[in-house]
Image 1 (cartoon, rainbow, N blue to C red):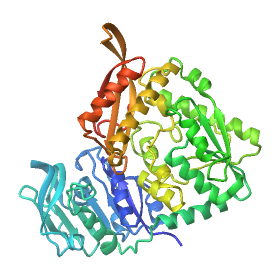
Image 2 (tube, rainbow, N blue to C red; image 1 turned 90 degrees about the vertical axis):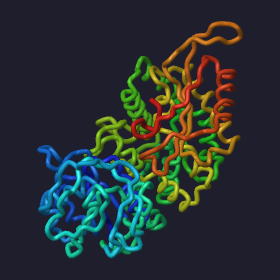
Image 3 (cartoon, rainbow, N blue to C red; image 1 turned 180 degrees about the vertical axis):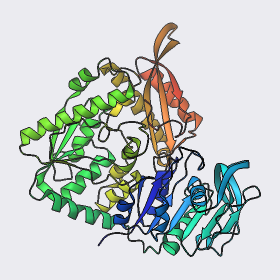
Length: 513
């Protein structure tokens, strides 16, 4: 049975993936696609609803992104958000212009809760606004269902045709009753039943893998991180001993991590996996010698990974499939589809043009990080593994700004181990999405033991996030940072300065590269 689906059409806004995640939280499957996706493909997907995202453009601009007019003739409910609401008004006979007063941030909105979209929502509710244009006249067959003192059409609808539009962003946490609004759209407007469940995803995916692989041999790229671990156990349940997990220790792992991964997934671990460890640090260091540009490092590491896997596959003989733990943010950030390339993840945009496998299987490709963790729990993976700190495939190669050397890897490994140890001791790790130490390429003068030093600065990073698409810098206790700083400077040779990164995502990424 085909699952119910809501499609998000991407018009370039920063919260587009968050919309999909919020819809999935309503137990309705959701995918993001380019705004100009072919209409016939949309029809073939048979969506229960379509959501237009926000975006940075003005709808009346010559080069502004627009969908085809036939999109409104599919008989499918449509919800326009921010730019999407203005686009709906503009294309259906209303008018959009520059607002006399721009609205940014938390705004009190008065809503008409006789609308299905606002059923159960307070008459006055706090919503997140971010716009310089506004709808100054709704289309003739629409009624206005929300306003603010300076925005006459904060929401509008044509209930007969199931067209709804909101000027604010219901998907962000700052909109107090946003989840209620999105739930109303998918359940009351789109009439979804809510058949997206993680247990059904796991069961369906296992059956699909079995059907695809048949009697073929499978090689899994196992890093020991959350994503690849879940992918490995998922494949093990699907094809058993047809799976071989190859763990490449590229010399860019956290301190002692290679041995820890082998202890869990190796022959003495709790899982009955065919496990091969390849110690390839010297090989990767040689490839990275002299390379300083982070995107180039990612691609070098990504290609070398594939080459190692190909070599191991030939030793095993006749391997048909390569499995990777690619997840949805990896795909989006790697610029597949309409999104701009932020960074090439080694298992997505970092793949070389030629890969010597019949097919690459990415069972987690459409999941967000929190959904991957839920899948891991459904598979029976212990919580301490499921909630392990995220770690990028390229490893410390992208937590070292500038050229990668064995000595720099030692520095960042030792600094990171101290940082993580003190964070755990202080008991603040449970509230953090990700935290780590990175090595900058800045060297500065210091004084240690009455002698001049000229050593590196280590940068500490800690963020809070629910989906890894956006993040805020964590406000760590100063006494914790002070203790970490003292230990790093005293215990890690080659470091005389420690910095703390206070930047959120956006404008920064979570990684420090």
